[in-house]
Image (tube, rainbow, N blue to C red; front, side, top):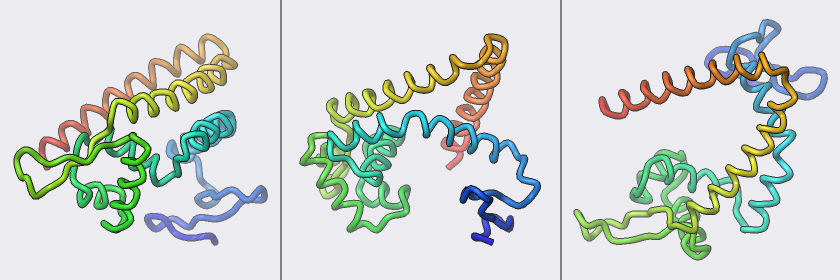
Length: 173
């Protein structure tokens, strides 16, 4: 056994991949398999873009969090990323030096600093996403047209449902 996630035993299969027990045929497991295939195709391009910019995975997570959350304090970013405030502050400082984020005074509370993506940060994330999208489009292009059409419909419905649910939860909290 490798570990336990939400009470389910996780095991390593013969190829060294993590799987949830012998009956791991959940949608989550299938989605992970699909992402793993996509990641195999796009990892080298994504890592090259990150390497050229000197971006680490925690910095990438910080950039994505800021894009999703908008401008926020280091404390809130640390809480969302489950990092210490000191580690998050260090990440933010590095991203400020790279010109990808900006740290400014909060208009509502001048004692507080807000961290926001800069236009350069947005452009960098966009470049990374375009690279990944092109790789995914190539992979999906290998599927028969009928399956691509079905896949598109299912993805659109899932995205819509999840987005609506997340917006409702955001308004409730």
